[in-house]
Image 1 (cartoon, helix red, strand yellow):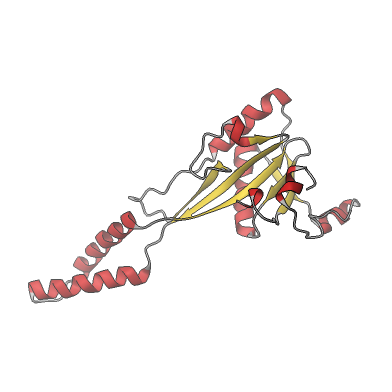
Image 2: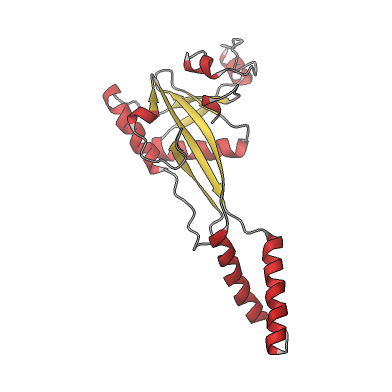
Length: 208
């Protein structure tokens, strides 16, 4: 998790949401995260991808206890993405072995219908044994300054997270980039705008 180890780079955004009283912020945040909480891929389905919010230090955790979620004025959590795909080469190899055994047993090649039916069964068998590839992208939401940092350079992932935040909190992300700041007439050479990497200690002190 980039927030807790090594140097880090991130995308920075201003967050525009509806106003909430301070006493409601924590409950509001918890409910919002749980609306888009991560759910594992159903191996019996055809889904190859699953994504959602998880706890920062526990990629399997979706309870978001206060002690694990809030650090001062910041809320720290992650966006988890799982992908589960059956390698085409593996599926092909299994099918070739089956075809050879079928011809030996029945004295003929399997029909298209038989091949199609068995391919589905083999694919499901391989899915049940496959290990999903898991990636997490950390987020730091400063509830006081209304700024959000996302530790990813993938525009697609940022857009996916933005949609999830919009659906969960009615939030809209406004990029805090040099161009955006210049348009506002408030450009200043902050580390994140200049592309400087910050250490976890600097992030924790709020120097981001």
